[in-house]
Image (cartoon, rainbow, N blue to C red; front, top):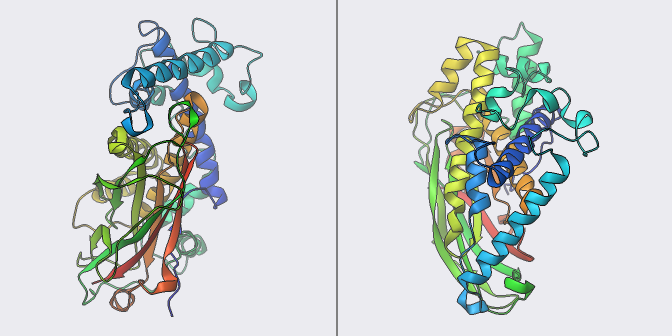
Amino acid sequence: MPKQNSVILNEAMDPDIAAVVHQAEKYIGLAVDKAVANSIDPKRFPIKKGTLEHLLLQRLKRAPAANPTRGETRADLLKESRRRMANAQRHWKERYTATGQLRKNAPRTSSYYGALATAVRLDSNKPIADQLPPDHFFGGSKRLLQRMDCLAKPVNDALPVSKDAYQWLKDLTGASGQPSSSLPTKTKLECVIKEVNCIDETDGFMWTEAGADEIYLGGMKVDPCAVVSKIPGSHVKDFDKDGDTKSYPPPTYKVFADFSLQDAGEWPRAFFATYVLAEKDMGGLGEFLSELVDLVRVRLAAELAASLGPEAAAILLAAAVPGVVAAAIAIALMVIVFIVVIAVFEAIKRAWEDDLFEPLTVMLPIDSPAAADNFDWVSEDLWGPLNFLGHGGHYQLFYSWRCV
């Protein structure tokens, strides 16, 4: 009997990746601060489109849609949005001077930001990313760079570090098969959903559970080429009480994402599915997440390419071309990207009380074409639960995989 060995990417278990995420969190913190600063004084703290701080600013300004079943009105939620904005601005002013300098007695100054506390200026026309040192993300983890450099090349048995890099990828993804360039008989991998359960209704305006939760589900998928595709949001159900359930009966279930198994290239391969649960027609969350993943990926890939040279740069560029199966380095990069994205959502919650359901990304490694042909995880004991917590509520989704 196979085991449910897909991995939920919600934290950095690997110490080398944890070092990169720690550096990314500093970048995220400064981008959040720049977004709040712009909301206070847009002329003094200019923001360019296409930057992380611009994307965060749009999220900061967005008021949630009213849910009439809860007795909410647009005016109620605009008032609540202004309250959150005022709180975020008040906390910012406690940490920064009017010109955007970190106060000496503010928490997380030199001990947290180090040289960035003075090197990065919120009142600069330059985006935060352009003010960071060229090796900001990966410079503190030379071992990670060495591993990823080896992943960008064929394995060389004469080089211990090359063997170590491939073992690291296996540890990271759970893939343990031997390289193969053949194709499976089955043509498609599907990520399917059996049910969505309301464990605890969310809190509406004035923190009550009165009325129904209008729950939508969307997200994105990333294939082994590291090509990101958005999954549009669709209405799951109006959940009107704790214990309410939406079921997708067998044998069809609900197909959340599908992937081709017929692309040429090497095995093992890793597949990613990101679930985004939200109230009231997604509230722009799907678009926000898609742009966020692109921004983080491009920034990290640019630094990796600069650090590892043209060979790695070529692989990273090829990974974005459909039909080209990505090298192992692209898989490792996407693992890092999704963990960094979770850090962005945590920063949003801290900064302005936007208590979103955190998106959850599941990675599935498949060792070989033969493993794909024998793959069918829809037995009763092979459904993995995903728990979404936010807005004072708790939802649970049961998912699995199958090759067809």
